[in-house]
Image (cartoon, rainbow, N blue to C red; front, side, top):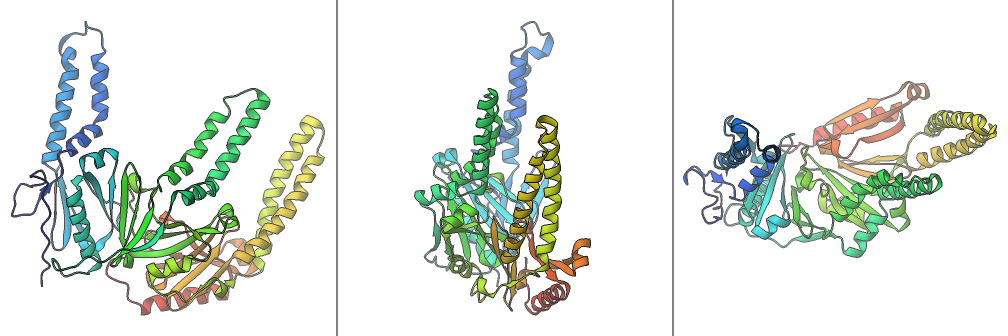
Length: 484
């Protein structure tokens, strides 16, 4: 039986396409202003020409007017030649004034549907909709009315998850997964390792600037605080909920942004515990979907499920996303003790280089080569302590449903991967690992480039082969859903 699409709400005629029968719809007329903004380089050129001397000969005297008119006409043409439609099987976007293009995204490949309504958009009741699939190129529709955005979201998410029977589908209450009130938002910001490093760099810059009377030195370092501050501010009003079989995340005050992902598209759940956050007893839960292309507007929001929850709460969050998780951290098997020797050797190489440099500088400027020996002694102790701490943290566990991995001394990471999402398993061994009989198992899923590698580090070779073989065998028994 062919699925019938619900009628898309109108925007007083602004959204009507070329034909009411073929389903094509234009974007909101405010998109014309957005198109003009994308041609800002031409507007700047017009302003530059406008300030030329009055005796510029010929047509250049009116070139600024001609460019301004051309920009407006071209923006208007792009608006009229851009349209989208939703069919029972795909989302289609056609655009182009001189070079025509038609982009088709199958609805069963949709990974997430995001919306970004900036301050101006909220004033005019419009939003930008971003539809992502397991592909490098998303479909962005900006602007559409809020009613159209909501209808589009519901149609595409129903098509992606395969749920619902059309018009008769009833909305269910949203289940709150996590929220971030203002007090916790401040704690999230001050416990961010990047913000801590930036603050230390600024303090060091201030000290150097005062000591050398070069007060401009701290100014370039202030940029180190920009990204963590923007990331924390972007989570104002954070709220994640589960509606039917999809996860919805939203945040923002002046500009409201939200993203949605079907639960079946989640590739893994990751728990991060930076040092300061652990000290206060909190952790951050994130996820990875098969969504490869992420817009700049939604970058700060991408992946967050629970930015700040008490340590140990990860399992409750993970089970809401992945279903029952039988594994726990107590089940983790440690890597080989030989990883301590390997880490110590790598650390001593770095310590030797730094100690030699410090010793040379101390001898050259103060005849104090002993400073290098002091650095070498302290560095050796630190390398041994780090190696032992690293070994105690490294761990892995596997059952028929999930793979769990843990690593990281300072920024600890616990990763839970559904076995049926594993796409590739690689066993790697460096010359030093081969000498010690060790290997690293590298697990790959869709969209993993956004969160880094998933590794079981420094396992005995036989254990690494067992893990890889069991992963492949278990994944083969569980059919991968259509899509990713």
